[in-house]
Each structure stands twice: as C-alpha cells, then as structure tokens.
Length: 563
Ligand code: PGA
Ligand code: ZN
Image 1 (cartoon, helix red, strand yellow):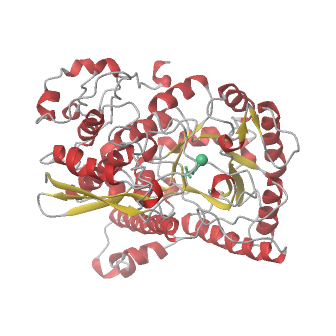
Image 2 (cartoon, protein in one colour):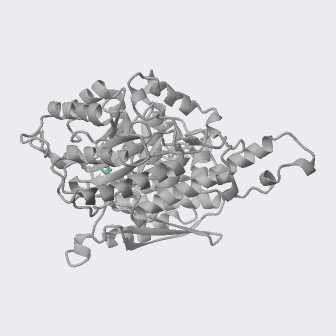
Image 3 (cartoon, helix red, strand yellow):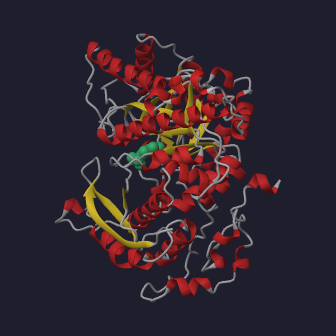
C-alpha cells in the first residue's frame, strides 16, 4: 500500500460550460489519479448540496472556488498519510469534517471529488482496473458483466427546448443483444431518428445531453416517432428494443397537479398513473423514472402496487441516492428500482451502501451520469464493479457521453479477454504441437473477435434472482432483465482488503466537529466500535467504520434481512 501524499483540486468546466471541480491525488510512490465531478440540471430537492460561490461577477455566480479551497485547505490535508484502500474510514472522515446533514458546509461537490479520487487511488495502489478493484473490495457481484444501457434519444423538460414536458424519451435494448450489438442498435436508431425528423420537417437540433429536441405537438408524438424510426431499421420493436421515460415529474408539478401538453387540463396523480398505464399498453414503456413529484408518496406507492410487477418504477429525485430514503422506499414499496448518482449523496461509501441495499432487496440498480458531466468515466467502473443491472449515460452523442460508452467498450474487451484466458486454462493438456495457435497467442483484440465464448453459462446468484423476476407473466412482454455479457468468475484470491461501506451521516442539529483540530484520526480512533451495533457488519473486521456520532446513525440493515 502506498499512502496518500497530496490532494489538489481546481475549477474546470462541465459539459454545459458551468464550473465544477477536478481533483488530483498523488500517492507516496509518485503515481497519481484524477477525477472530475458532475452536476445536475433537474436537481432533486433532497440531494446533498453543492457549494457555489454565488459571486455574480464570476462564472455567472456559479464558480466553485470556495469548494476548491475546502478540498485544498481542509479535506485534502487531513488525508495525507492515509491508506487510500480504507475508503470507508476516509469517507467517514470527510463526512465528519463537513459536519452537516446535507454536506452544505464544505460542499457535496468538494466531498465527492475527494471521495472519488480516493477510490481511484485505492485501485491504482492495488494495481487493479477500477471496476475489478470495486468488485473485489465490496463483493456486490460474483461476476463482471456489461450492464444494459438506457439510451436517451429525445429530450424535453429542463434538458430540452421547452417543446416537450417529459425529460427523456429512451430506448432500452433487449438483453439478448450483447454490448457491441446494443450499441450498434442505439447508434443506428439515433442516426435514423434524425433522418425521420428531417423528413417530417421537425426541428432536429439537440438538448443538454445530445438528445433531439423536436417541436412535436405533444409527448405522445415523441413515442410514436421513435417507434416509427425503429420500424425503419432492421430492429424489431418490443422484441429487440423497448421504451422508457424519465418523467422528472417535479418539473411539471404545480399546486398538486401535473401539467402535460397531452391534455388541456392538468392531471391529478391518479390521472397521471392512468396515462403511464396507457403508455405501457400502447408503446411498451416499461421503464418510468420519477413518475411523480418526490413528496407525492401516495401516488408512487399506488403506481408500484399497480404496475410494479411488470415495470421498472425508478426513483431518482425521489431517492437521491440516500440510504435513508431508499430504506424507507423499500419498506413502503414506493418503487422497485433506484437511480444511482454518487454526487447526490456525496461519498462513494454512501453510494455503495445504497447499491448494496437495493440489490439485497431485489431492486434493479441503474448507475447514472448527470447532465452536467465531463469526460470522466468513473460511473462506468462503478456500475460494472458493483454489478448494476443498468446504466444511463445519455444518447450516443457528445464527448462526455461517448467517453462512457467507449469505456464500456474497453471493459467489454477486457472481460472477453479474461474469459478467453479462463477457457484456455480449462482446456485439457495437449501436446504442444497440436495446441491451437490462435488460443496460445490470443490478444485482447483477438479475444473480442472470438464469438465462441458464451459466458452466460457462468452461474450467478444475481442472475437467478433476476430470472425469477422475469418469470412474471407480464414481464415477458418486456426486455429480459438478465445481464447480457457475464464474463468472469470471481478472483479466488482477492488482493484488496474487503470492505463493506457503513458510513454514519451526521445527525441533524449536532455540532459540527472543529475542522481546525490537528488530529481528527486520533480523536476517531478512541470511539469504541460496539457503538455501531445498529449497522450491517463489515465483511472484514479490520475495516470497521469509525463512528464519531453514534447517536446520529441510522439502521441500514436491509428490510429483507429483518424478515
Ligand atoms: P440531471 O438529470 O440534469 O439532474 O443530471 C438527469 C436525470 O434526471 O436523470
Ligand atoms: Zn432522472
């Protein structure tokens, strides 16, 4: 292990031209990592809070120099000499240094920047690609595979040109397509959609994420036009590809009603639920994200009860990657899938806790970018390493989105190569002169081209769990939720310390720790570990979470474990 030598942050721009934080970390051995944090446009009201300068004379008030200073003068210096593979301890230190419930004091943008660099540094220090480090460290998946992609094609709401109310009109490939085929399909349909829009005389410029923002009459027209486009390609609608929507309903919610172009009168929550059912019946829309405003809990619950067995009801602004909110939503059956955005909660460890809980509870996990992204591909490795079933990275367009799809392509090649190596190792010994030369000399590229590897045969408890879900009679009309590209078996000798992240949020109203204290680590080390009894036990005791404020801890045991 090489300890942390220095952490340094600076202000850079995100894909919207709005400032964000780039953070570098140097290890004692001279090697370094860097990360950039994304930022949202349709930000949920319960998200951890970014710190912005609010100086109207600079960067239209959205500078992040205060947050950068917090990294350089408060957070970074406290981490010098620490082991980067102790993610939970390091994240707990960040949480405690901030001391506020919503990370508003030092800024969630400052904290997540440091937390992400620590994870990347841990991987570097362990000489592993980030996704393999995450898999070995947290053991949330037995096998590594490429998640299914939710591709956004048309944008409305806060991401669009005020033509449409729904924020994202999405296509989701069926899982019989492997990643290269799914990507090929998305690119084909995305490109054809432009032609169809031009043919119809519709506007075909793009929105915040690179999805089209056509001037259509209403939201339903967007679904119609996507289906028409699919039919003009070699793909079969509702067989190769299905539809989804991020409603981002808070953005069209006013005085208890939902205002959509599709109807002259505002919708009640009940009427909106009926609208969703009609979208499913007419257009096979089986993925609905942020169906209602985040406090309209009754509506969420009823929709999930009604169509949740056959549809993905996804909480984004509803859950804000919060362990507390996800725990409650699972107990109250508000939805059945969680959108995961690390910057919504502010540390990697808290993000991992949410993914773990969701998976243990049989939920689907969708790891997502933000509209204010950069070319950083951190979320790709996070998704693969935790065994998330889905990712959402926007349309196959624009540098910051393409960086993620290209990272998936790289990981796909590496997994194919690993599978090839496993297959070769399992070959019975043959005399050297008759060994097939192509296997002896396989390179990653050759391995990728080899079509004979059928890795779905690898037994995987998660897959079994998913296939149970797919046996529901109605889900058969939806995409197969199993994972398309399972490749490797777990490493029997993991070289990283196993860690189960158990971060304790700071209690509301408690006094924040004094950030001027010289030795926070000494202070934390004196806290007895049995004060964490409410929490899920880490896999390895050597990596117990440090808890400064046990009275502020929440019970993060999965509701399923209580049964
Ligand atoms: P964002 O929204 O603009 O807040 O990143 C993306 C989403 O709602 O999924
Ligand atoms: Zn969303």
